Length: 487
Ligand SMILES: [Zn+2]
Image (cartoon, rainbow, N blue to C red; front, side, top):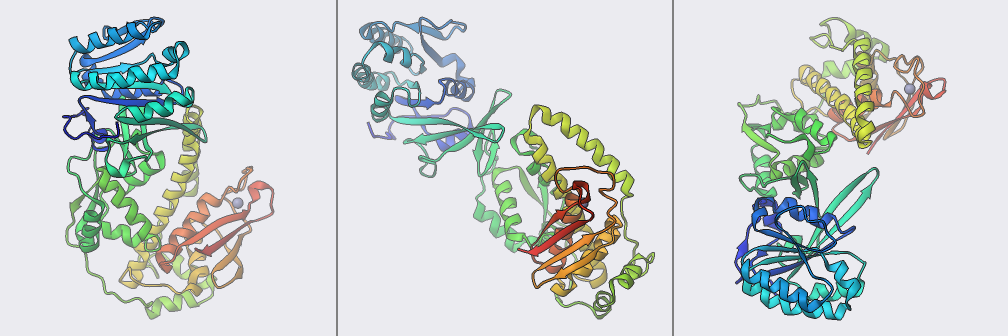
């Protein structure tokens, strides 16, 4: 009964992730419950696809036999059934049996009688050295199910959870599993006859070749941050969300230290994500060429303090001078070209989201991420250029001017600050050309403007800033207004 009998020889399915989570042993019975009496069978068929020749599906006579390893068993009489199955066990030792007829059996016989047969079989399964799965739709034969859970050696429950427009699948092991997975739902997905199982937060079809722990990686990151370059390993796009895939590929080849400088305001969160990806094997590290050493000064140079102290119009003029103040002309993508690319992307996303509505939401997140990343890269480049070091902490009072300069340089927008509080700023754009002819039922300029504001202020202030568009001309307002606040 309640034994995870370690004397029984371990059986490896060959799926390295599943084998780390659940321990199948010869001579063992497993109750596999699911939602619609179909998920469990699909799960086993793909999990054990390399053992097809030694896997037998036992079905009722109603079932149409389509494969050579399917056998119909008599369900009218429990005695006939028991004789048939035990005979099969004697001739087919060391095999995997999948019992697919329990619902039909339970309609004809009392739960107690069926349980008695299962209890007797425990010893027969052990003697045959088989691994046997009993499949059952959950909450259908509640009384039987409760008692059957106590008879078998282990249980796996499969759950299907609807999340917005898609279905997420989980299996929950009980007994005979790694202690940290006992009674914990593990996400999985079947894709192109591959079984992807959640490992350290990522769906994978095999374990990373070298198992590393989160604490190993954290230690490495914290002691060698200037000697590591992020390297994305061969990954299949379908094991990650679109947004994660976009973020991950954008980090490929980037020195770890640069990532830290790009996200000084959100570093703990970004570091956590990098560690998670590294543990799951989708991200690795190369050695970096020695990184330039910067002075650790945190205050602003006098020259730049002056720039940020003059009225915004003059500051903008200084910045706009070709190769003038910044030592390099601010490079911006011509707006028309940028909008044309966005329009084309929107059409592709609309097409793709007809099949998978999730794509639209993901694409929106990814667009915002890229806007913010490029703002962060530009800001970091100029901070290093002007200050000689990325460590400079700009004072909060400079935030409006930083926003004005960035939006003028990046989008050609004239910004007007309405109110400035200690940790929140309200600003408007009267003649916003981004949404000139646009009509929208949600703020239209948000994705262009707010991402730049969060990115630039994150890099300069080293504080996390959230920005949202409150009114937008595309929604019928006479101007576009935004609020940026410290988190
Ligand atoms: Zn707007």
